[in-house]
Image 1 (cartoon, one colour):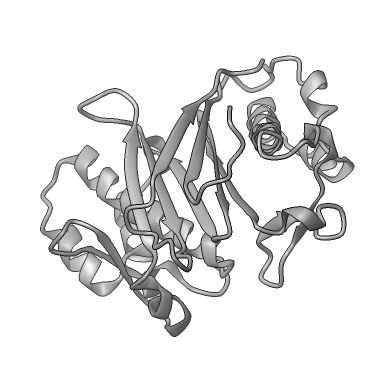
Image 2: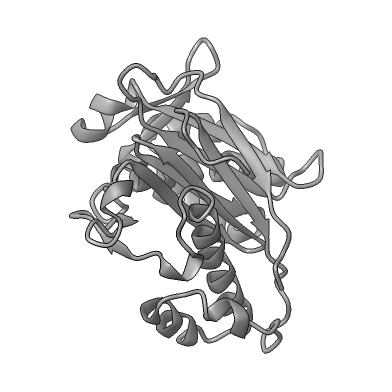
Length: 257
């Protein structure tokens, strides 16, 4: 794969098999690619399937980053910004200060987004993650979204897809800005489609000021007509390269285990 030198961005997707509790592929070769903090966190997972998802997602991130610099996957070092957003360690990778990334994973899927010189966020959620649609709607939807929710009918799959679209959009937006759900409750953010069918964000001052410029992308993954995974991207504009119309390349990876 070519190294990124243009202003585009990449999304990398890795299906992760979710076996029964207690079952797991041999993760030892993959664990060797992680740092001691990641290995310790992986060891704390109660269920093997959760450990497998965590390890494969973080190995995917390291391998994707290694496609953009002559650095082995196990040699990447990370730090967290003021708001807790993961970033490359500035001391270990001073020449790569423009390389940005974000990681998400859920049942059955790991996803990484990589860009140059612009903040990005990604989120992916599985349809089965919603146990109680009404409870989730009351928690994450803003008032105008609640009104739209009540108008969409009783189809259970459609109602879950409506919720997942908003949920992943809000997660991606907050992850991109580094704000996180701890700072902004999801029901304070409102997503709506404009006349051109583009997602627009309205919310707290910090987000609404940038929300008019940011690009938000949603897509579904899985068998039609009822795909099971929802993916959302949040893309910051960059001088001379607005986010609107920025090419997004998708890469599908095979399960390394």
